[in-house]
Image (cartoon, rainbow, N blue to C red; front, side):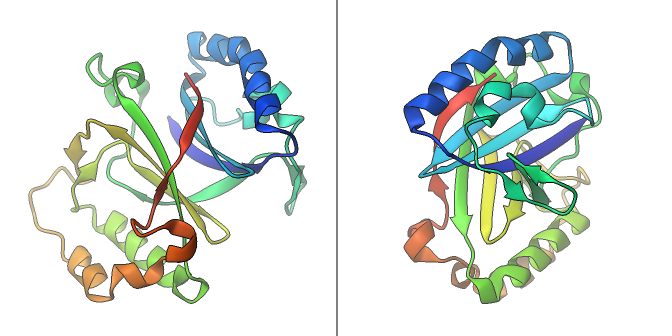
Length: 212
């Protein structure tokens, strides 16, 4: 089972985008019914879209799920080809899904929770510091947080997906205290965020425009 985040840039009005997602819903629901997609949530900020995707099919791309919407997105030049949806590199999480059955129970099914998307802008001179400490926290595996939280990076933008009410856990399923979080707090986390773009809370909550 795979979790992925993507970023896209809109090349149409928001009303056209919302209509296109409506036209894509049936295909997305069919993929979910067929077991290839578990969950998909899309959020909007200005002229950007952010997608959180849970799937059991490694070959499935956002363009396969949102064929109509993808036609209304600008293409990003990447190494192998131009893409409508840019893969965001995962850097932070609190749990590792093994299979759909153990990942979500009836009690924490996506439709029973509030699914949130938010973004933050990092200062360029602090970007690698943020990534270093968050990857170190993941590798240590002791810090507890929302088991569904998933943060990924594209350029200087972080996209964070999480769910409420939160279910706290850590990767190692241990009560041992995290040492890396102490190191992260010591380097002034607030100094890593561009507060003019991210707001005083570091992350901006986004409007949800599609969810299955």
